[in-house]
Length: 465
Image (cartoon, rainbow, N blue to C red; front, side, top):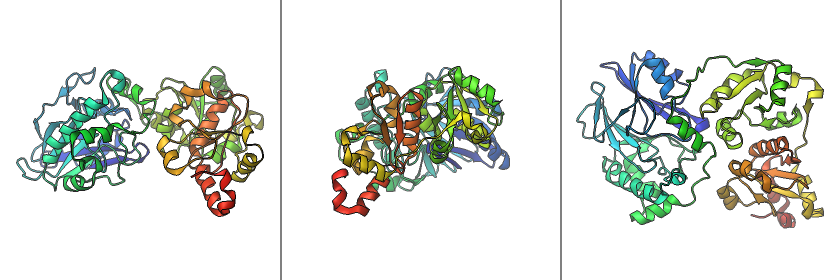
């Protein structure tokens, strides 16, 4: 059974044998109730937690699930982690009863990466499927560059990945289904599909990384133009190797009175407001950073907050538990508490509002005094390259913003844009919290481009495609 977490594009799996009631969980997310509840529903006992590799994009739930179930934790390498685990040998078979799991060592995304071939009956010529972790995705392969800062070259990992795919996975029958650890939106690959499973045969035909002719072409393809590595990846990867406190996903978030909340803020805690950008800009606390809970909340928070940064939550009172747990999914555990009421219930003296810049207003400013307009585009390089940007805008992707604050002007107001207005609200709020005069563009570059199409060629002097 596949469990898919949209906000992190993460797939995990429960595999069980009903004849014996024995089961394993593969690549669990940190909040693990769903695995325990599903196993109980089907009369299964989770006896092993298998990690296809040490993950960087989320904090795995192996410790939480082991504590809940008593199951052992397994990796492809004995030295992958610093806590008790059972190494799985290449070619080893784990028999759950009739169901057989075959371990394939498939280094390339990471040195310890493994895949699991699933057969409904031991000895089946055609497996039901293969759990490919971050080795093979639907539409792409895993990125090989995440260990470059640790002295492991992307090229050497790419060559290992090529061999793992061609000598191990592509030797499986075409009918074998592919079940990856991630789907579209994940930063662990470039061109991941929205499909959550496929077959070896179809991937052999349509996956661009598998249709190149030589190993050298493969290496060139997979080592170039990868997405920017989110800044929290290194922290989360290291944390996944360590003993650490487990998450109580149902444990309450400490409620803070306005006085305690403001005291925590004044002592250096970051105020994280989880409402949508429109509500946030209409009224929010001075110094608050806006990361909307809807969408890719944890990933976005991980781009602009430090992993050990103390945080107090506000927005709507009902959202605190979800926000705490979603931050915990990437290992951000320093949530001190949450405001005990909706933020708009505070006195007006505590709140400020910010006017978002309208498309027509920005166009007029660019027409009248372009030298006075300081534009900051926080989209990714590929987005800006493929879709264009506004003339004069500096490209500084959101995951790189904090590291480059000292390069930004403090002499003029910064107007921040993204694709639709969500990331720009995050960036502008962060900039204001750090002392900059910053506003963001309502509707983002998408609205700007739509305006261009409406106005036609007469307005093209202020636009670029």
